[in-house]
Length: 402
Image (tube, helix red, strand yellow):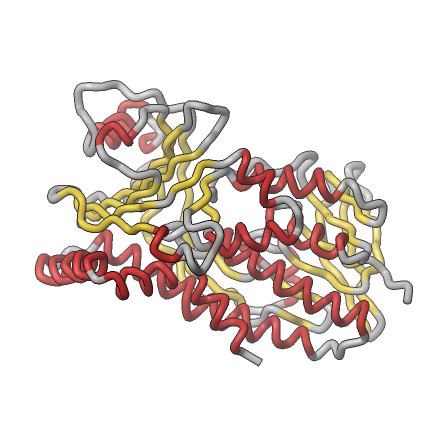
């Protein structure tokens, strides 16, 4: 049966993974991207074991691994006390062929997926095409987009996937609420070429402090050598120019590394952080995935991963509908599965992670850090903690939902 293509708004990693998954199943896809190139977003760069396994099914996992760094152990530290807990993903090696966090910038996955997508004649990416909205009826969806010359074009689609980020036009056209909140403070994120392993840090570490917690992530960048991305909370009232001042940034890094060194900082940025989930992931023939459907703070590296899990879950169901005659009601299960695990796992865990790092009550702080020490010391508890934090548990939970 001939179908109109599935139109995907957004050529980030989630949109391109969804497009590649559909194209490999023989389904025509058109990806709309407002930029004239693959977006170079530097925020996300951690891939959990189940996500790497999913990318293997698309035959791009090996390529991504060849450009990435493996982080088998990660830490929670206290700004004053030092190391609190070091988690070892080797403990769950019986559950996954990839018992590590894979660190690589998300735009590299986008480029790999786009290269693979180019091998399919029934798939195309329309750069400099911004989705303006859509109108749907019983037989399909008419998508409006602004082309590079500013003129509006229309594309007839069988289904639409909104993977167009937190400010999603598709979600706004759908009219569903984006429920949740915005954290009052902003995040300063910068990178340094100084190797933090020289001071005992693993490739991923979270440093608790009631006044100035931080998080570090190693990234390959254009190395070797790699770079280290560091995130700090910034008071809402601070002017962005002041935050990005070189002396201010140097002061931040010297506060928890050696104050006697000057650190090379190749890039820096400030952004706001939200915890929000769309009320609906589906409206008829239109579905949301990735940041268009849910956003969260980066403490735990779950946002990008849950978006890819969305893409793989949704495209498997779309293939059943388009190729095998399954009822479109199957797509309601996508909403139930992915929204539920985002609320129960992604939102809950990332909020908990942030509150752990910034806890001000000395007694509560001591109790929580002692709990982490006890967790690492108990192999069964250590293992269960990793099953949750690596997102294996969230995928199991999703599969249970009918």
